[in-house]
Amino acid sequence: MALVVQKFGGSSLSDTERIRAVADHVARTRRQGHEVVVVVSAMGKTTDELIRLAGEVSKVVPGRELDMLLTTGERISMALLCMALAELGVPAASFTGSQAGIVTDAVHTKAKIVEVRGDRVRGALAEGKVPVVAGFQGVSLGREITTLGRGGSDTTAVAVAAALGAGVCEIYTDVSGVFSADPRLVPDARRLARISFEEMLEVAASGGRVLMHRSVEFGRRYHVPIHVRSSFTWEPGTWVVEEEEAMEEALVTAVTHDTSEVKLTVSGVPDRPGIAARLFRGLAERAVNVDMIVQNTSSHGLTDISFTVPADDLAVALGVSQAVAPGIGATGVTADAEVAKVSVIGAGMRSSPGVTATMFEALAAASINIEMISTSPIRISCVLRRADVERAVALLHDAFELGTDAPARRAGAS
Ligand code: ASP
Ligand code: MG
Image (cartoon, rainbow, N blue to C red; front, side, top):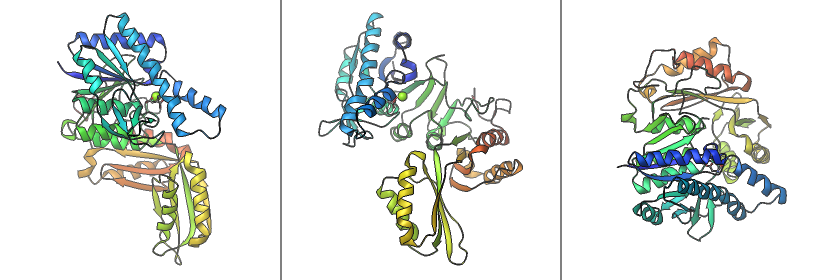
């Protein structure tokens, strides 16, 4: 009898009919002989709606009060799910993040979990109940209610699974797994049977929206296998596992894209030590997360520095760059929102040198210009025109033969 943590996202709990379907599934899992702990998100678009309400009453939304407000969304789901389980004769008990002992730091709206105590969850299990834990929330050491950032229920689920020593953390969502590319852009994208934690971290950081990055980090650190699957078909989905278990290492596993970033260019800066440091210290002080950076070779001692930031941070990043520019002798700052990033990811490229060339050749053959490049040992990313992104994803997916029509590269791929 294994312990299973099952997390249900907002789309899996969008109305009472869906909540009853989830209760059925939990009951079924119990009948199969498993112990189940459930983690829930807020119903449907509840969190967006609550944020909208906050904005209607105030332009200055205090983080503490926003957290108080947003945590109510998950409370609704957990209570309703427990009632639906009661209707099926399954004993269940709901717990807020605080009651479940999800201890976080004190950073409102983006708190980090520091410890999962879980005594009451263990107690409920011992009494033969299904504990239903509110995702996305916790309590700080100063006893303030906190939230973990948008999509944070995934992180709650994996952290709870780690603390309880669960055999698997199942993440139920409205897609049936992790695909070799976004199926909306690439019709023959393949659902991956397995992907390694390292690859999944790269997918999450480069535009793949299936799992929150931090939840994958938790899974890797505490060795919790994550099974991403559909709450609409209930079919087996994608397992995120240790690299050794991810089977044969494909050269490239997935192609991802990201249209959420913009490019800034600071031009005509003197090519000498300390200039980049001043610019990026300024951005760091305003908590702007810089992704890619390119500094051109200098001509006549002057150079351009281009970098990408989340579109949400554009105004702040532009302000900082314009403020820093005169002091570092730059001649101008420009912003470009019409960019997108395409990445190819695969653990196999660590030992195979040709992947970069194949990627660049495929883009060149389609006359797609590469504006910026960055790499990790298992990822190559290119910034290009946003208008080219759909074409780029499709042709790279073809170039690396990732489609369902291509010969199976990965044992067990479905
Ligand atoms: N309800 C929260 C959100 O919409 C947390 C989650 O869904 O994981 O961001
Ligand atoms: Mg959600």
